[in-house]
Amino acid sequence: MISEATELGRGMPPPEKNSLLAALLRRRAERAGHPVDKAALEEVVRKMRLRIGSPSTPFGPSGLLVKDPMLAFRGDPDHPLHDALGYKNLGMPESVDVLVLGNSQVHSLYAPPQETWPTLLGARTGLAVYNGAMGSYSPIQYFLGYRELDALHAGCVVVVLYMGNNVYNSANTFRKIPDAFRKGFVASGLEAAANFPTHHATQIESSDPAKRIEQFMQAAKTDTEGFCFARVRQFTHYLLPALRLAVQNLQNEFVAGGLELALQSLTKLAGLARERGAPLVVLRMPTKERVVYERHREFGDVKLSAEAALQRLWAMEVEADRRIAEHLAALAVPSHCLGAPLAALLHEPMYPPLDVDGHPSLHGRFRVAEMVADFLAGTPALAPGSNRAL
Image (cartoon, rainbow, N blue to C red):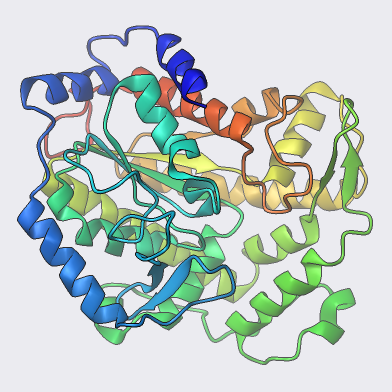
């Protein structure tokens, strides 16, 4: 692992001097990396501990999460994989050049901290990267989390939007956070009944739209018939296009409301980053199903079943991605979709064969770290206090 990370760093060519990556490296060298405000950070930890209680209350079945009245839930700070704030890092940082916000695509579930792609990104670039992601988080929690982490004095914020659940998770999060934290958001459609494919109807009992989505997910994850394909190199992956389509279906009022909340959260994130003088960039992470279908469209070298369902999902996800990209462009926030780069590498072991949620393998995380480093190296440096290029 360490030798691989060393090789990853050696393979990084010097960035262009006007790139965001070069600006972050200069910032680190010239101002000693902007040390974190340790006293303020200790106060954040103290307040967090008071909120979650002692003992804390577990949230969900993973063993990684606890209830937090501010964020609905957060990483368990007492879990051996997590730091004092409940995020997956090798201890609390001395300085932070890049703060990464995201969900399990960034947190990497049960992988150790040194094997997450933010840590590998640090090895590749020489920057101090803090992983501020947590599984099942939504853009609302990205914003609230960033607001809490002011003491890190991050030089840049990288937000990872995962198309597989960030939209509907925004609607679910809004329903769970306290009224005080809902201020400034405009929500609509969250009381609408969620409609799902009829072959799962007998397993969906609740009339609550958020609960119906949760029940549908559990039902669909156990129904893989027709949702698999054999890769050319004899790997088998499970694909769930019906599940992904249901939770990205913008014709459903609940999901459409979640998209609007996600866009509002991005607006708030951009405003807060400007106030703090930290450039904000966004990576749009596609579902594994979209990656597979894009590989099929571009190269025609994967064997598909449920091709019609994958095509419908692809069309819906592309539309949601387009709306997000246009919103970010209007905010002058650089963004990049990882769909085509991931599709080009699909026949490498990018995903564990039986992972239904498309979490990258360790090899895949190395590749994502390379992609993010290249994105930072190819993005123009941004003026302090803005998201506009110098």
